[in-house]
Amino acid sequence: GAAHASRIVLDIDIQKNEPRVLEDEQAPNPTRWRGTELTVTVGGAWRAYKARIVAYLRQLAIITPYATLALDFKGSGGTKRDVALRFERRTTKVPPMPRTTGYHPSAVNELLLEQLLRKTTASTLVQFLSKSGALSSVSAALAKRVVAECGKGFRADDDPIDVADDRKKLQRLARLLREVSIFPPPTGDCLSPVGEYNLRLGVEKEVRPDYVATCASAPRVHDGHAFVVEAAVSVGGAGASDEAGLQVFRFANRIPLLFEGGADVATRVAFRKVKWPNYKIDIKREKVGVFVSLVSTRIPFKGTSKEYIGEDATEIHDAVKDCLCRCGLQLKAQLLKRDQAKQGRDRKKNLLRYVPDVASALWKVLGSLDDA
Image 1 (cartoon, rainbow, N blue to C red):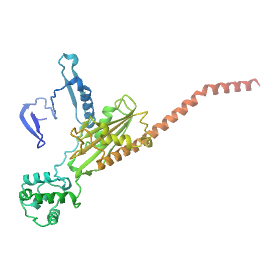
Image 2 (image 1 turned 90 degrees about the vertical axis):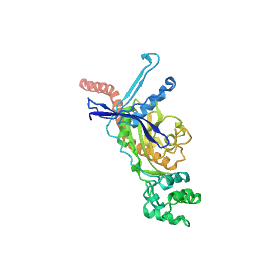
Image 3 (image 1 turned 60 degrees about the vertical axis):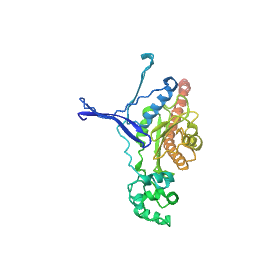
Image 4 (image 1 turned 30 degrees about the horizontal axis):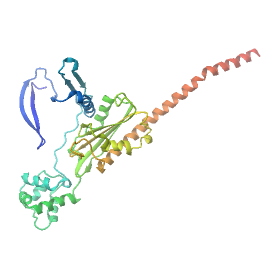
């Protein structure tokens, strides 16, 4: 580690979605400590939300097994009410940093396009479309083609501000960008999924299952935004639930979602679309955990609570179902071996039950032969 450690206090500019630095200072680091420590102070009704807070941290430990999480609650009535929790990390492998990207043309509406046109430093419309970084998947040749297809009144050297000021031009350009299908789909390098390896480690660390399978989808597109679905299915273990049944854990950009789970696409797919008996999984007799993580440049939440994703997001629905079915196939092979081994043990046990009677019968037969 370095001779000095940085201490930074910040909050978030919710309009720009950027950190706002309040304090930035250097402190001596005599032990040469190395790493990153994040401290968040929160006030609230501990008695009412204790179970939710613990569940949130535990699920966060599953989806971020590369981080050590600690909770230190100080009660007002003395040390008897203090609570200390700690979730140790299992790996040092951190997900890759996402690459900064622009909006895909199919994700741009009229209001957003106007904002981008007014903020750009590009001097021409073609440069704005292809080189400003505001949009992705638009080459110079495609930009010129778009301008030509916009029709009368559009020129390649139009000033972006003039286009933003002209309502008809703005509407025409926004509609064309969303409707044409000449642009390549967005890539997944702007995303930062946790990875199958880390997801498996997180489930194993916190749930301790007997069997676990993981799967990740290839980058797909919903409403012009790239997304990746990662899923894990666990069977057995001490941590998934105290009772047999199917339990679904949901994550959006590595944030646990605790509320309104019944309406979420992951819950609907897990309970209604996946035929678990086909994979030798009996959700009525076994403890089954389903973990679904969605990573995207835009999470299509329903409602203002931002706690669940609707089933009408077809592309996401299909990706979740595909991942869970692939996990089921992996588990099927393991569970078949388990069932075969159990059948072998049961046969052996049944045979051993008759050994004393068979031995006694043989002893009598042999004794009668000796007497004869």
